[in-house]
Length: 188
Ligand SMILES: CC(C)(COP(=O)(O)OP(=O)(O)OC[C@H]1O[C@@H](n2cnc3c(N)ncnc32)[C@H](O)[C@@H]1OP(=O)(O)O)[C@@H](O)C(=O)NCCC(=O)NCCS
Image (cartoon, rainbow, N blue to C red; front, side, top):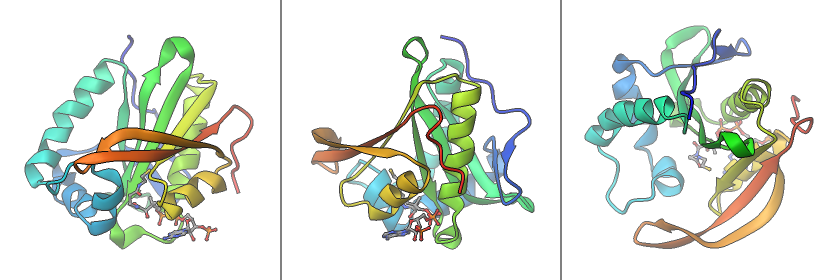
């Protein structure tokens, strides 16, 4: 499969900037993701994330990008691009089927002011325009009200619950699934 190119120019709406991760983001990347909410909803292992896990993500991300499977971007403050607010990714890219999934997390210091919604709008628009997907999927835990609200604000339609969908923290977890089709993205 063809490698996924980083959006060029980087995606921005003037408030958030989606850019490649940099080595010197590692401390913010860890601090943002190690908090209770990200661990509860976005980390499937029982043991908490470590700095070594985050350090290893750089090489894993790059391998997956080159394989055309996923693209993981830092979400930064557009006014101060060195300041990390979170992450946004396109993953499970199935080019032949024109389908992909999107995911995100926002650091505790940047939550509650539209960062996830802005990032998802930018990434979804790019996936339709550049990857030419015909279906974008978004999944989250059934009790993740904030993520469900982000999805709905961007126009994603809730399709239902995938029962016993993934291994999660030593058990199996149901998953709420949403989708967005071309023309459905809500920009306000
Ligand atoms: C989910 C998450 C990304 C939201 O990030 P955010 O930048 O704070 O979200 P936004 O500011 O764009 O908020 C979007 C909407 O969610 C609502 N919201 C936020 N927290 C909420 C909560 N706990 N319960 C219900 N709604 C909530 C906001 O009010 C807003 O809706 P509104 O505009 O109608 O008021 C963030 O809470 C997070 O990182 N959580 C942990 C990781 C995670 O769950 N990632 C997604 C996995 S699928």
